[in-house]
Length: 64
Image (cartoon, rainbow, N blue to C red):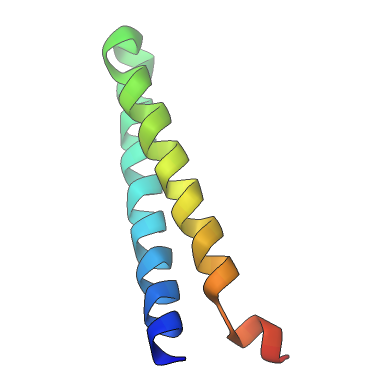
């Protein structure tokens, strides 16, 4: 139970961090699209996957 909550919180924080990085890369994608679009898409996908896994592991929503 505690491990699920820890993993959920960790994935939530990592997800937001990766999404912040993808927003930064989007800025560079506007300036240099060829160099930054692939890392942007990878980090965006990773961030969304972490947030999705965090929501799936969050047991507090299921208790309500």
